[in-house]
Length: 54
Image 1 (cartoon, rainbow, N blue to C red):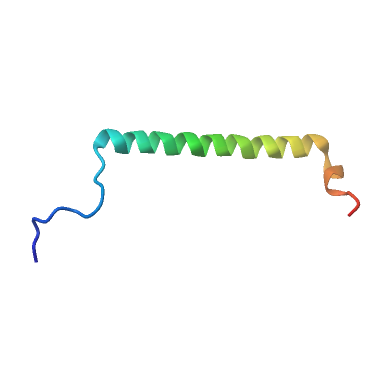
Image 2: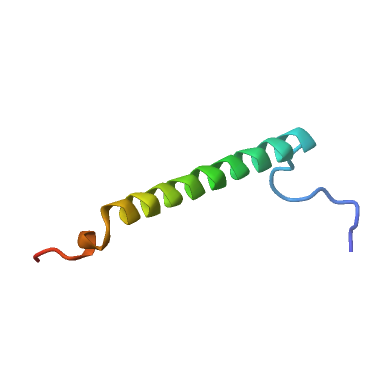
């Protein structure tokens, strides 16, 4: 086996990995806030939101 071969694909630098992680955390937080906002709006409108004619 050749242990000195280069890895396949793109190898990210530490700065790129850190940037990717920060971006992922920001997206996750934004998604969480959006879910909480939808939940809060649904609770404020009350259960009547679910009762509607088809």
